[in-house]
Amino acid sequence: MKMLRKAILAAACTAGLAIAAPPAVAQTTLRVVMHSDLKILDPIWTTAYIVRNHGYMIYDTLLAQDEKGAIKLQMVEKYETAPDNKSYTFTLRDGLLWHDGQPVTSEDCIASIKRWAVKDSLGQKMMTFVDSIAAVDARTFTIKLKEPTGLVLLGLSKPSSNVPFMMPKRVADTDPNKQIEDFTGSGPFVFVKDEWKPGDKTVYVKFGKYKPRAEPASGLAGGKVVKVDRVEWRAISDAQQTVNALSKGEIDFVEAPSHDLLPTLKKDPNVTVFVSPLAKNQYVFRPNTLHKPFDNPKIRHALWYAFNQEDFLMATIGDENYIKPCKALFICDTPLASTKGTDGLLTSNAKKAQELLKEAGYDGTPVLLMHSTDLKVLTNLAPVAKSLMEKAGFKVDMQSMDWQTLVARRAKKDPPSAGGWNAFLTSWVAADVMNPISTAYVNAGCDKASFGWPCDEKLEKLRDDFARETDPAKQKAIAEAVQLRVIEYTPEIPVGEWVAPVAMRKNVKGYLTSPVPVLWNVEITN
Image (cartoon, rainbow, N blue to C red):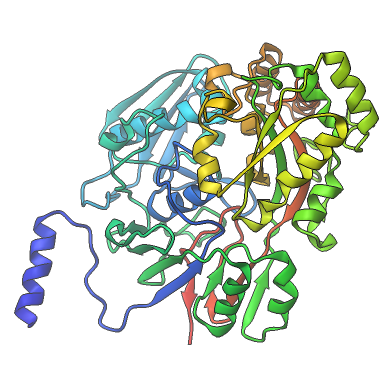
């Protein structure tokens, strides 16, 4: 039997499979329920957070932000900035390997940066400053700029969707508008594709050849030390069933427990409810500017009067301890927060909205509003929007679907009558929406913009100004100008802020304070 085991391991190594030697003791499995089922696997193709979470399991990043938001080295060993601030030279850490055993190279990273930058709002803007990205040798590459900008380090350390995950060149060469089919990463976990069963479970195993940094883990930075052998994401859509499974010890961790069940969990002596200070979120209404009626900015603008944030927040979260009405586009209590231009807005002034619709020539074209039904924190958003819009004089065709179907459909530019859409609501973690560059829905770059495809030269000029500016006071002034233009042009509408606790068994230790739920550093104790 021992001879057979050795032969199997030898064959696996010969085939280039990056597997760890079997542990001498029983495997430790962390059983997790995430906020959504995983059906899409390309974290560059979509901004969906469940796919971002999957990305952090199997991929790594060149730079990363710690729990205080400071930019730290990750895959990079060192970097140098030219005296004129128009060139960066990055050197990778020695010993970085892909899951197939091949070394990570500069060419891999260059291809990954380029693919990410096509899809990501911050990446797109960063690349307008880039003159060239070129390999110096297998572990060193340069980014040369046309003019100085702070977006390079900010972009390569971007903590949330889209994250600039590094992939092998053969994978990163995939058309950014097509999904990848090879899921080889270099991160702390390996995706076990053969055990992936959408609607049931997703499996990851520890990558035995991963080389963590020496620094302690902090946020998304530092040493990604894996302390379990196997992680299983269990697909349980029913909130009560999820809580019951956690209480019984059938699962170990819940990313997004239902807010109305938190009192029950807090009473359980075997469960810890944890609220990360980085887990603030913003609800957003996103109109599609390509098709009637929201191809008319004056019609879109009426929504600022039709909506109010309290209705959205109470219908979804329902607990005042976890919600905050906030009209600031760039998140309350952050450096760029402002309420400039928001007086009288988001007050459910149906009469004012009706007047604006009449002035704009609204002809009764129905708004096809996509309604996500399977994520508790999103489910009641669309019905609230429908009610408020109808009071304002809109006709609304609300179509229900699960979140993954919505994610796929929102990428379509077809007219609503041909499988397209007019509007949907979603939520962004605060780390994604704290400035005009990273906030994806402020990108008004036409076809290069995110789904909804706003096209506005004034917004893009302001975003360029922000990217060039380094003085915080001047950045604040530009951010306020962006907010005023967003109110006028309406590529999005913020409809309230909320926080999302996680819940775990008390024998689960080491969960990190981060804007993203990450599972390295987590261990199961006796």
